[in-house]
Image 1 (tube, one colour):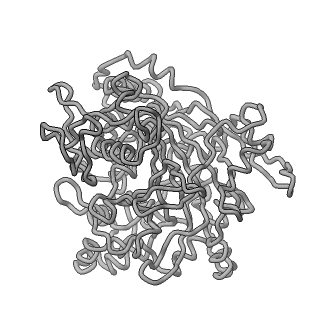
Image 2 (cartoon, rainbow, N blue to C red; image 1 turned 30 degrees about the vertical axis):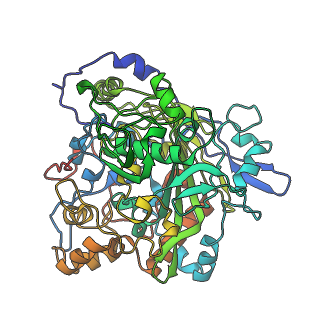
Image 3 (cartoon, helix red, strand yellow; image 1 turned 180 degrees about the vertical axis):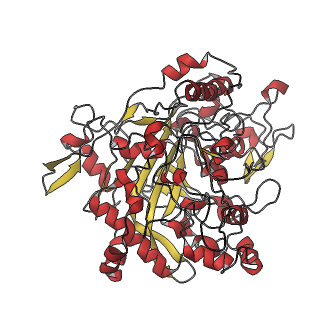
Length: 580
C-alpha cells in the first residue's frame, strides 16, 4: 500500500538498498484452466505458471476500502475506525509506522479502484437455494485426511504433478508437503499415525480483531514448529523436554515476558533458565534480554550449540531461523452444546509459513526505511513478491508463505501466485505484527495447559475465555466495538450491532460486562448466520473466484468504496495508537 509520507522524514540508512534488491522481484498468476488426469478422474486445475494477474494489487485486502462514515442510522455522520487494528506504530524490531493510514486511502493508482468484485455480489438468492442439511454435510467432511487417516496432499504432491502445478517444470513438488496430522496429546503436541512426534504444536490465542472473528465468516487454528535442532540433544536425538523448554524460551522472546514451565533441572542444560544466579530447579523461563547491558538469553540442547556457533540467532521479538507455522482456515460448524459454534472438519485453506533467513535489528530498520523511501519515490508502484507456488512467496524479511485452498470438488490444491499474494500485504510491512506473525504473540498463557492446546481440545471451544486487554488495562474487543461501532470492518454484521448497541449509539453495559468474562458472546454467530456464511463461501469455491475476493459476503456491504481518490481522506478524525 502507498503511504501518505511526511517528505521531511529522514531516511536513516541507505544501506537498505542492497538488502531490498535481494528481496524484490516479479510475481503474478493467471486464472486459465487446464484439464489433467491423476489416474482416477479428470479434474480442472488452476494454471500456476503465468505471471499475469487479474489483480496485481491483491496484497491490499478488501477491508482497506472500508467507508468509515455512516450516512444513515444511529451513527449517521460519525466516523468509525477499524483501521487502527492493522495500521499503527510498530514495536521494535518492527520499525514500520503506518498509523497515518488510519487517515488516508494512500493507494497506488491501480488500486484506487476496488478490484475485489465478489464483495458486490448479492448471494442471498443462491444461499436460500442451498439446503441447510447439505451444507452441514459438506463442512463436516474431512478434506485434509484420506480414508486411512493419512494426509491426502502427501499422496497428491508426491505423485507426478499436473502441469499447471509444476512451477519449474521438473515434474515434482519442491515446496512444503503438509505433515501435521492434527492428532494432539494433552499438551498440544501433534503425533503421526505411528505415535511419533511431528514437531508441530497447537496453541490457543486471542483472535485478532474484526475479520478474524468466527462471527464474520471462518474459524481457524495455528500450529508452530521449531527447526530440528531445537528438538534435539547435542547428539542429534529427539528430546521432548529440550523441545518444550526451547518453545518456552522462544515464547519469552516473542512475548517479552516470563513464561511458566514444568519443573526442570537446569544442570542438565547448563543454563540458568530462571536467572536466579544458580543452576537448580526452574519453574519458569525468566525474560532478561538486553545485549547492550550484557544480558543475553540462550536456547538449550543442540540449538544452544548452534546459537554459540552463529548458526541460529536469538533476539527479542524475533523467531529463530527455521520456525514454521501452519494456519488452517475452516468453515463454521453449529455443533451446539457447550461449544455452540465450532470448527468444521473441512478446511477452506491450509496456510504455511517458514522463516528461512535472519535479519538483525539494523537490517530490519533498513528494510522499513527502504519501504518509506520506495513509497516516497514511486507512490504508484505496486509491490511485487519473489517466489512461486511451490517454494512460496517471500515477504522481504526472511519469511516465505505458501498454501492450499479448496478446488471445485472440495479437495485441497496449491494456491496460485495471485491467491498467495492476498496473504502478503498482512504479513509484510505491517506495523502490528511481531516478526510478521499475528497469532503467537497473542498466545493464551493462563488457560488450560498454559495455552498449549488445540481448539478442539477445549470443552467449551471459545466460550468462557476472558476478553484480552491492552497493556494499559483497556479491554481490546470492547474498545474495537466502541470506536468502530461494529464487529467487522464493513459494519455489516447486524447480529453484533444489534446485540451490543441495540438501536442506539452507545454500547449496552450488560453486554460489555458479559464480554469481559466470555468472548464467545461476541465472537460466535447464531446457527442461522453460521450456516449462511458457510453457504456464501461455498459459492465462491464453486466459482473458484478467490482472486475476486474470498470473504464470506452474504449481501453487498453498504460501507465500502468501489473507488477512492488519490490520498483521499478516510473520514477518521483521530489516529488511535495501541498501548504497548
